[in-house]
Length: 561
Image 1 (tube, one colour):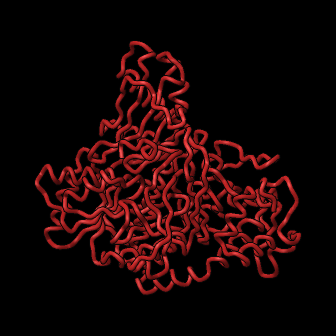
Image 2 (spheres, rainbow, N blue to C red):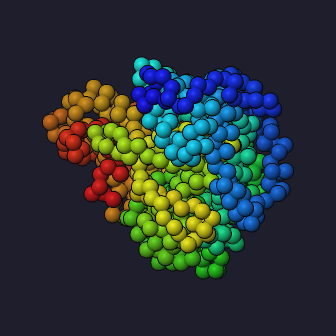
């Protein structure tokens, strides 16, 4: 297998062809059935299946004992699970983008089998990555073509949809090229990830705790809510901080949550603004005083707002656990949350895959998590990004019900990967890989939502110079946080541009960003509510190598956490 990404001949110890894969009893080749049906028809069909199948799905819950046994079995069969995924979702699927990358690298299914059997899944994936079988974050999002040696491939986000699932409902990501990236969820995916949460809840002693959601309303939240219901622990309160997505996704979201309420008896969402977090603080404080040890699922910055609201009203949140995801849990955010008496417990994951890591009771860093290696492989590769060198995280999913097929896919984040023993339940099960100091380098995150850096760059480099003067070198957006851990965005405008109305600059930036993707309207509204974006007259900040990127993320600006 050539290391140049496909220019040379195979060196895999034999030549393989299509006859090496699927044999009798295995799936026949498919030409990407995931893309044949229009989205509207697929969504309607999925919602119909959900309507008739949800009660039965929730009737049988997952016990901690079953969850532990399931995780242990999957840890023992990782190599086989990966090869099964390759056979059915890649080499049996002529529309698979990975099939093109494998063949450009001179690798057929028999070669991949030989690699995995000889050295294990981790070493095999490194060999494949070095040969060009990987996907960068912009390639995965469809923003740029994938170039491997002399070959060029154009992928769309939908090309990575799994052909192995029967989707039940949609959710979405920030999207690319003017469209939100849709993700189709299978109820089996909910069950797969519920196994991890069952063990996680047992690890922390939360199995009897009331669950409260403080999140926006969109279909992806239903995954977490149904996951909790599958554990037999449906949420008892939902403070909804807003609605996001296209009208189609909002309608689908409302229907999914309606079905969930009917099937599991959960309450209706209660609207709350981010500047009204005192309402959340009062509710969870009352539960804590009653001794019920509530768990609150939300984002780190929202949890920090709840902690601050509690402090302003003299409320103690002792016994409350905030289950956090969607943005970095930095030391400042953890300190603000825990100053209220509550615990801050990190998770790490994303819509295309689900949970990647969960934090145990004795983390080595504020955001440290046990990587869920029973269902994924996590690695990193060094590359240039925004004028700096980063260790870009690569993920490979071996979960059979994942919405997306992911093999050595960059997820736009960087972090520190370590292996060490841990005496918690997760560690005793065999999850000895840890990830911490997780930061994004391809996107901005705040209040649990995401804005792609490419969109910010377009507004900063094209719209603002055209409207207010100067050039692309005179504008930069810097993602930081204040000393309490609350998110802040500073729009730097160089004094060289000359006199201008800073309020007009801010209004234009937000007004131009909001319509680029349906999910951005929600995010901009959150920024306006919390006054999170400010204009400062200062020169853009260069990287250590002297480059001046259009935006700099929280992970790159070390002085701010």
